[in-house]
Image (cartoon, rainbow, N blue to C red; front, side, top):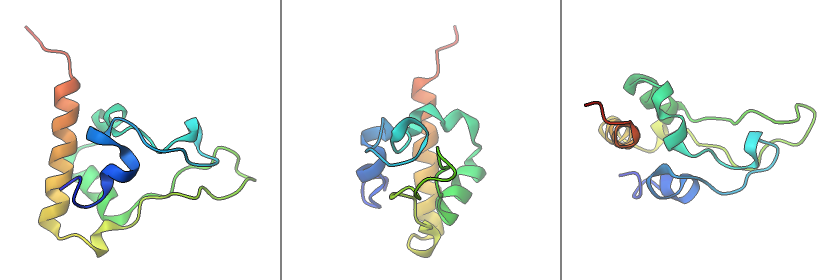
Length: 99
């Protein structure tokens, strides 16, 4: 679903990193794998549903050209849940194993 919805186009394979974006911290669309641990499943669903306008690096500068649209207008609730769970599975793969 991540690939079918087009998330992969901006966030890269398995959320590893994205394309350049102007006037944003780091100069790129964020790598999802780096931020997933900071969100609950419900928070991720909400972000996917309502979209995200990136924070401007320079508040007086141009608007970033790329933003995440409100997928709640395009995807079903089940598809949003699937994407959020997939993203959380990526974070789980990156977590150190506890012995």
